[in-house]
Amino acid sequence: MSNKLPSREQALQLLRESNCSAKVVEHCEAVAKLAAETAKIIQGKGLKVNVELVEIGALVHDIGRSKTHSVSHAVAGAKIAESAGLPEPVVAIIKRHVGGGITAAEAEALGWPRDNYVPITLEEKIVSYADKLIETSGRVPIEMTINKLKEEKLDTAADRVRLLHDEIESLFGERP
Image 1 (cartoon, rainbow, N blue to C red):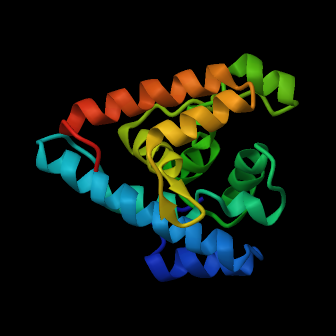
Image 2: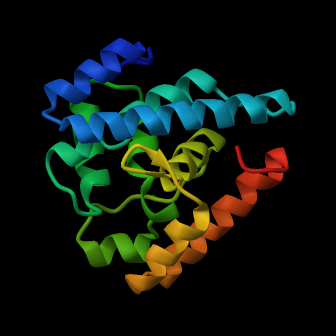
């Protein structure tokens, strides 16, 4: 595993080489743009955030969609990223971006490897949050994402997304 972040071009190439659809690549680019903007705003407020890590992590966050479109794309993506030698912070972003986080109990119920799937670092939280604001490649209100999760009877995930939204919003005072 490398400690060096890939360039934007290398990240996009990895998505294509992993057979991600054009739609997934477009989504990842939209999430990366919003996540980088959000990180820059937060950085401008004096908080320490690695904007480059946020952008690269967001670019590859859905690489696992080349294997599955289920929630398990986070686990599949982390494996692809590890195999590609991506740095651990990027692997963690991929692993922890779904549903505002997946608890150990939920991961066990899904048959996932024992691990932490809840975003911890500010970079992980920013990517997870930006992902919840992009539907396909367009911006959507957070309420739309939360309501969709509730309609799918995923109330716990909806609550976690709300908490993530509140936490990020508190860092810059308004939505990016």
